[in-house]
Length: 176
Image 1 (cartoon, helix red, strand yellow):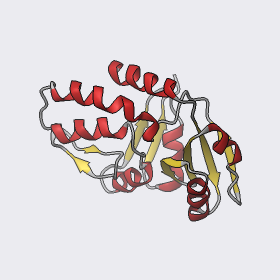
Image 2 (tube, rainbow, N blue to C red):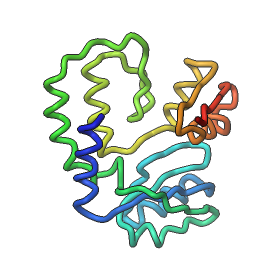
Image 3 (cartoon, helix red, strand yellow):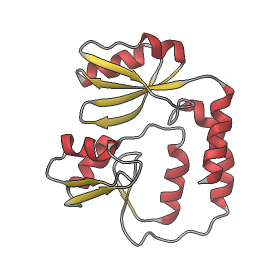
């Protein structure tokens, strides 16, 4: 985790970039507006929220019809190609780790797939650094696997998305 943070900070320092939450609007219109500006839908969170990432000037122009855009206080364009320089150093570290099958299913942010093979989980975690997060697909998978979810501090964002997208899952956010 420490190495991931260090390498991502190095990558973020190479070129100024950022992220903005796009709230509401028609999903296809939002995705098209993001793409038209050369940005990436770095987090497809479902429940009417997509996080755009990339060039700061392009983010400042982002204004999809019917949506609100809120700049996020982050140091870079995470889960995009801007983070690619962090991948190779983490692949080297991951290759040296001994892994085992997970004792419980892991839902991958890549595609919402349930994964238990330890090496695949680790490879997906490393690849996720420079690829979009599909929380929308994770929530769909969660709906068929759990009846409740607890979010630990800082908390509130994920259970808020779950409440809107999958209201059959009971949620609780520990705020402190």
